[in-house]
Amino acid sequence: MTSDFPHSAVPAHGPVTLPDLEPGWVWLVGAGPGDPGLLTLLAVRALAQADVVVYDALVDRRILSLAHARADLVFAGKRGGRPSASQADISANLVALARRGLRVARLKGGDPCMFGRGGEEALALARARVPFRIVPGVTAGIGGLAYAGIPATHRDANTAITFVTGHTIGGDVPGDLDWAALARGSPALVFYMGLGHIGRIAGALTAAGRPGTEPVAVISRATTPEQTVLVTTLAEAEAAVAAARPRTPALVVVGAIVRFREEIAWFERIATMAETGEMP
Image (cartoon, rainbow, N blue to C red; front, side, top):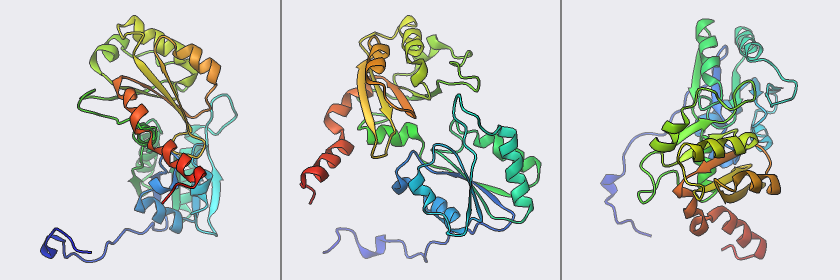
């Protein structure tokens, strides 16, 4: 097999070298939205070298299997309505583990700093003078949309996309959202953790001027074998969710980009091909 590109076009650099997770360090690692194949090289390296993996509730269990066999796995997840560790306690534990000279991988679903409170943990480590590294991950608002067959941007639909949290620490819709600005200013909206407030979100957007016929997608368990995608409209979103009862975690996507799913939908197509034996 020959290449159309001259050999000289291939960079003649040496092998890729990656940093080590050193004793006394904490790496804040994004685990991606679920599919282990979306982990970065640095994330895999952290799991292989960590003495302790402090992981969140949304981290896929298949990813935890990549941790070193002798690593301690420490659950530090927070789920709405259930007893869970406080953020202050989690941050303090990271500091304490690092000060014991351990290699610490703090594993967070998606990207640590996209609604993942990674910034708060980084500040706590910096203020305690604990050395750390932030390892970005594929956020659900990008990876989840891609696996649902919904392009985050498409030149025929949008030149901007806005990521919004639909759930505050107290469990309510954020009170400081400018719904009129969101409705006018961004043709594509992605709400994280907004499933429980879908009716209020849809109502606020239509009241601010978005048409009730605008397409909406609810992506449940994105990038995992349990992924489902519900396509509806703003006007019908609340009733559709009540009928389908999609599982959390879920993303709510609003905008014309949802229409591309009907043709793209590659993830479900591959699953169907595998079930019918049509895979090459």
